[in-house]
Length: 112
Image (cartoon, rainbow, N blue to C red):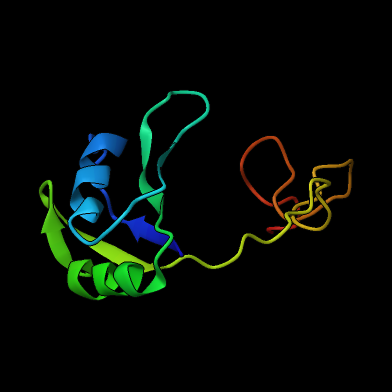
């Protein structure tokens, strides 16, 4: 079972999570998610445990408990959804158009 852990201390490392979850059974892998640019933890991670009963017990007993100075949230991980890599919608940064307060002096052109 894949387990999602959030609200981790930014200094939490995979080894300490491995030790925590190993108290409940076999742990196949631990992945603390880090920022691509800084390498700093993003405050969440994933634990993979092969035995569903052990994983469920870990979730029930560790959810909303203190770990390394933070109250962690522990849940069954949801399947990853595909993200659209092309950005559509959102803000249009393209050209022109007037709009309110386009005068250079900070006042609306039609104020008076």
